[in-house]
Image (cartoon, rainbow, N blue to C red; front, side):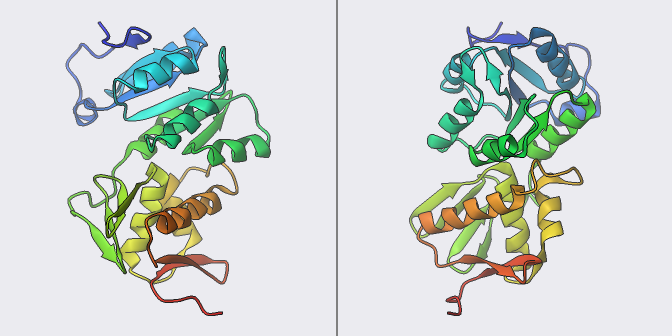
Length: 253
């Protein structure tokens, strides 16, 4: 029985879990989707790899559950009975909740994808979609940095804490989304050296396509804003349009 009365909780993994299931046993996903059949199919696909799920049919129901529990990721439909699912994503980001969000929609225009990413979504898929691709993208969003045993990385006046997904500069700190964390981890590992845009894309989204052509640029803009927010002198430099690097010196006029 769910402790969240607004949710339809789905558990399909009562049998002995496989090794894959055991490694994902602590993950739970919120599926914000009012199409009952689609929601059930998503939940069954998640259960097949050992991930539990709660289903919410409205923005309000998901928001209420979010305030009393935690999830590893959100799958959010845009067309919900009480509004656009992007409102939920915006509300989450407004309270510094950076749980990965994958947005589903039947809207395929580039402007719609950009709006989703600008609202704080980490990935964006249009309907109809292949369930295997949905699960692969979701697992990418939830994966930890490759060397999760490291306590933190440091460059200039900033420390990056992968386990907490945050940047720290003196007394200031800011949480990062999954894609932002992977990008920053890649830049920190290179410690001021050039990183090609393709490598940053792979760090954030693996081998799948980015949710929009502007996804990497939008993520870098948010990271630049995060550095300013915590009062850091560190900046992300654009190197000849081909890649980026961290710089802790003053930009050349």
